[in-house]
Image (cartoon, rainbow, N blue to C red):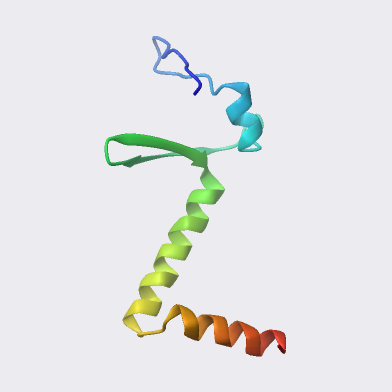
Length: 80
């Protein structure tokens, strides 16, 4: 667990070990996700990917496409 202090301007320094784990560098955007009384910080690009996955998952549910259907289609496309 890492700890940071909030500055008078509301700024927080992301600890080096966390920046390294997320492969964050200067100027990159991060996203804060609030879930069940906790805050998750992630690369903004990962958040966009998650939102895309959630949207595709919802589309699949609406069209009654199962996970097995997707796996079989992947095998077909890959020529397996």
